[in-house]
Length: 377
Image 1 (cartoon, rainbow, N blue to C red):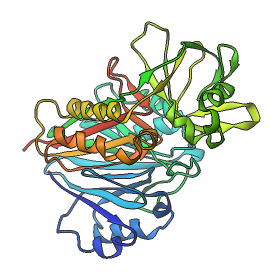
Image 2 (cartoon, one colour):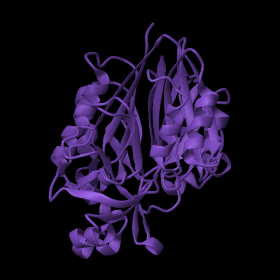
Image 3 (cartoon, one colour):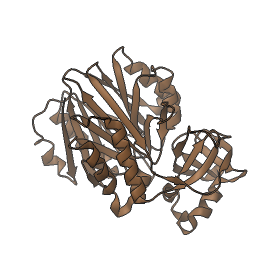
């Protein structure tokens, strides 16, 4: 397996892409700043440079290459497998007739006997990630690892874009299938946030829209905690994600973060489901806690052998906002674990990885999720 990670700022890609060292990849992953993603030329240039490769792309809330964190850059990885195969499929969410059905369509398109893993890039503002994963899971065997993330739009929560062999567009989800017995896939997903305040019960919700906690409007609760920051909703709510679980004693907890406000119904829109009857608690974090969580995610993904391969990292835009000027702390902490492994990724509106306790495929928020792709000789 050979991998080339690249990063171009501003218009450097015009010169940089043609000059990429010789490699004949089967797969190119490209992560673009929100403004860059609205320009069809960068992906077209990658397609021209690597005509035999699948080129999967998405918009971001920030781009990661090695230990460097960018805004409005083009970063990516060109990957050539020795024996493994790769296939990809793109689904239009509106045409699929629902997010769960989109998951089923992707699974049916990618499933083969030697499928080992599926990487997902999905629209970050028009997709209920929980429903997508449920649809995938009705078709895929449990031993197939599913990881990835939802596209970003900086911290604006406007329009997010995903593409396959063409310019990224809104309303799409891409699944990338990795095939072959030579593949080794590791993963890790950790937050670093801590809970605070009272436990509350989710008393009214529909799918991924939350209306009431303990019988009181959830939007009012967030405005109370945010104080003067409330005018910046939904972006400022990233500083106070929710941890939810079936009941107070359950270890099956997931973190949810707000991606929009439903003003007409006085609701909060999350990236994944907020089940009625579950408990919820607000969370907060510090840069040190989040950087430590990133290192633990990298360690989980590497296992005992941080050898050659590719680390695909998907962090949450909320972590980036919380870290502020210290945003590179989490990439530098991961680098200590990943050693010299090529690393590329993006800041997302939702991360996809197995749950650390149940091992179920799960949509996470406010985590650092690391997928390590290796190939045996």
